[in-house]
Image 1 (cartoon, helix red, strand yellow):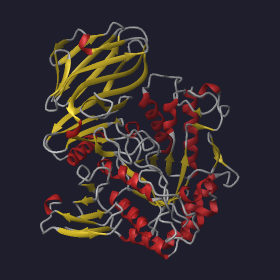
Image 2 (cartoon, helix red, strand yellow):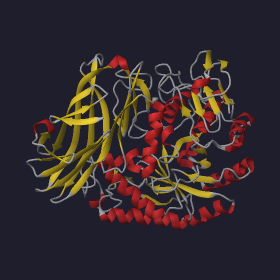
Image 3 (cartoon, one colour):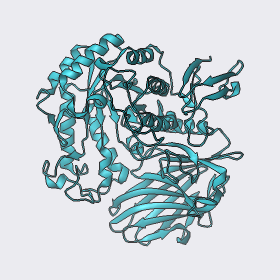
Image 4 (spheres, one colour):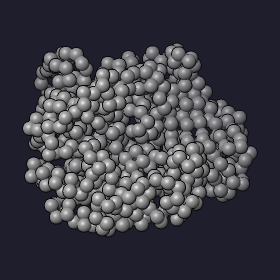
Length: 594
């Protein structure tokens, strides 16, 4: 339970107390313990000297705050709630969640300790959890929908630079918004939950809280092919047509979505076909459709190749002038420009839209209209795109900050770009396993591509590669057959979108067998839960991915060593005896235990 007592916040059952909230403006700074609060009917009210009226309410675990500007124009930079150090680092693991997949992997690690994948003290966006190593309650902190335009950031605050000893918690609402006289706005609701339930169950329940606010119906997960990983910007229409025909025959029509990624456009910002593609893109869509497929397309709507592609008042200000140009989506002219682009692509026949690099606008220092809030700017963009492509199109948010996308997109990329290296698989599956609770509750999860090509699975020639370093992106040799099989099974267990991206023509029988085996499996009804997410050895991925509804359990050995594991019946609600397995290096297995 969260309390506001003697002008301080107290989180009962957690050990966190004496919390102080700061309101930080461009020209002033106010702290909650120095304000004159009045309380009536469970609502605390305070007036800042700059004219901002604050109304605050606490409903057991949830904090509500509303604001009204009764004075002149204000610029709110951020709101911070700081709990001083009172928890012991040795007592807790922390679940951290990055703002988008580009910034850091998401998952579980010891508080204040780095691993091969995680930094010592990463910020956590949207949610954060502290799980006790032994006895005690788990502590879940989360921003609840609907998003009010800010990014919510949670981070441990350590009393020592060694990050040992005691730590507290800082909760920051990144606002960056102008507030006009008379304007009213709110903070996204904040959850403070202390519970003795299993931490994986708390995450699933958080997903259910979000699901209540999702108005859109979920679409079926996508099974398709994307041009990027094999062809990059060298893709041509004939490549797509050829691979579509091959995969149609190979899969019996199961693989039905075909996406042309980067390389089709004239330039970033000029979203018209380059000379490789028919100027009338409806011709490309017709050919894909004629073979029974759905045409998809990649775009990066806010990226501009130079600052002269659009009127200068549509270009956002960035810290490095003339180095990076970003479309300012808050300008009415830019908004209409985006509508024309996407309504035109929809009219051409595209029904799958992969929208990328929208996070670039977070680099901007000043926008035409600063009233949206930091996340609200992106929500405005996604709403315009959704209106332009209709509800019948499949909308994948790629490089999308999670809070800004909820309720608008059909799917969100949950992992970094895959490449044909085991180190990339490790990093990606760390985040995929940590975000299982979002799938089919918030949206469909997308783990990028299933790629299987390597020296053992393809007729291509590959460079020898570099030494393998765990956690170092794209290090080591190309995927072995066993590593490709492990990636395939992991993506299958996520139950999310499965997009192939190899040049199918160059795969040998071993490579094609991996794809054939995946296509033969009955789809899960939900994402498999990584039941040992909070109990796997430090720095390792969870080994047991369990779908209780279908009774399927995937067992992974992610390490370089031979390992014996015991599957405990009580962990999976089995009705029969446990299983003891001896696993070879990077050996995976899947069982049906129902």
